[in-house]
Image (cartoon, rainbow, N blue to C red):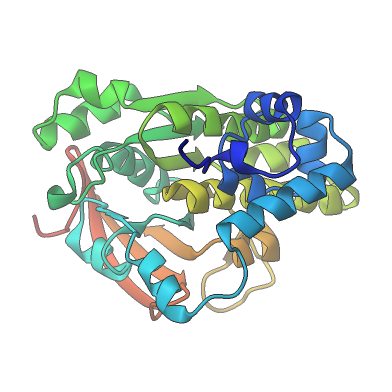
Length: 316
């Protein structure tokens, strides 16, 4: 008889509990190991103590303790990269947008944040030899920015079938922050059914800003945003996919010298995003990108162009 390796291999977990776990989307050991006892308890109806034991058993099966850095290096070798369409922008990001990470792009209106979102939703579908991951994308739209027509233009420019490109993007409109959080949670079901390699949230913060107004609601807003970001990071880690989020900026009238804008989201977003990109509009199609935070890359700046065919190098 073959040895059980899935969640069926967890000791002391009955058939009814296994059924509840699967129904709640906990179909593999990693999804259970990455959950909190509160999450698992709420989703399945088992007590928190029982949920804690299930999580501990899953972690033991996966050997989730300390490990040599050589093993971590092997995990890093699984990281894929998605081209932005611009060689100079790819270079700034160390070869493109990484899987297992969250990249946040902030900037004023017209700086190219949503254009880059559309471009990545198309280029992720390319085969690896052309800068893609041969995968599909999930697009959570909070500001009615998603435009299928733009996808068609970008797909045609890359010699792709526009209808296939559209079919490979699973889009949903989020009407408030609660809806946005639910869509991110439901994304896991789609990831299991389809070869999703990119999640886009455009924009991450707009619903949170409109739902939570005034200083008195700031703590609740930040806690909810923190949970949302952790959910996105968990999806990136468990399924080896990339997360691209756009963010708004606010004016800082107290700044007399330099750029009088600052990204929304505060320290929560600043710490949770793996890469932070600041985009600025210049003349005509020219855009300026500045990498302001990365775990392994130096700060840097480059220019790129937003053209009819998509994101490209400025001199193309």
